Image (cartoon, rainbow, N blue to C red; front, side):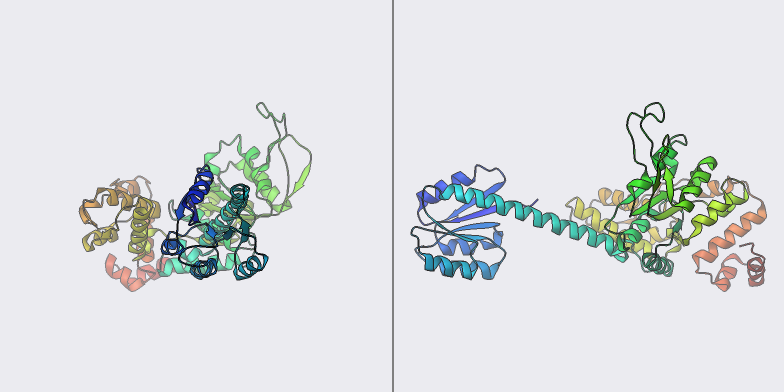
Length: 447
């Protein structure tokens, strides 16, 4: 919260200091005393939260000072304090915009104290509302938080728009670190459910024996340790959005229960008999190929088709071209702002180094690399020497999969097609193979 600043404008220095001392008893108040109207006006740049204004000042009238204050900022509450009761003057000042009119007496300091406390409450409430609107506004403008201009990310924007305008189940796929939860939040906070809960759960992080209780809740005494009733994520997300991250990690026995709950739109808590209906928007995500898991018998086919909904595939960072540099600049600016550091520039050599790196950890890895570089640099420029990669051998990781040569060839060609935006002639040239080979593989669904 911002400091609550109080200006006391009073030509009687003894009386003014008495008010200042009285109000300063509240440690949340920052109180300043001014003996003239002109001194007060010269300090309005400090943006006071409240002003107590003596009506009769040696250099200006109360009317003049009030008018100048309200011209500077009409939101500042101003209470006029006068040595005599003059109903006509009081009415005029209230019409001009004064918050209130007090007559100086033994109770003035207490009346000020009470009124200022109420004004402070309203001040804090307005701040909370303003901060909330700002936060929600940031979430609503998803094109500003999902950053990039590449064709790949623009395609994602188009699909997000379609998801926002309907209640269809959304399935997000993409490598780890591509921003799946960010997209899920963007869909929720731009949808008609935006004022309702957004509840996320990482399926892979919950032990399989507890996942049913986490999702559907349990009754008291349902199992050892169930000392109270617990609502599951489906119930807490009611009317809002439930995001099931890493859905591919769900145990097969739990998959059948999830399928029934999704189909029936109702559940029963573990250890209970009550049937509970719910209304949620479901978004699921995975970094694995669910169709391949279905073929291997590791994921239920009926659940797979139930979860397909609107599929949105998030592209790996290495396929997003100049988005790497756009994101790098965004991350360095944010890091400097959060840590009150001077602004940093990424050198041309550092940019080239970033563009050549494949980013197996995607956006999450880029953010970590940039933040480390911002700490390591000894100047206001991030140079290539400040950029350090976690050089795990990605080629070795690739070979550890122990695929057939045909599968490796398919993977390599698919990688280049994604990298060069499906430009077959370009890929054929880069790999030194005939374009007819690529067309044949596409025709036979090999890539």
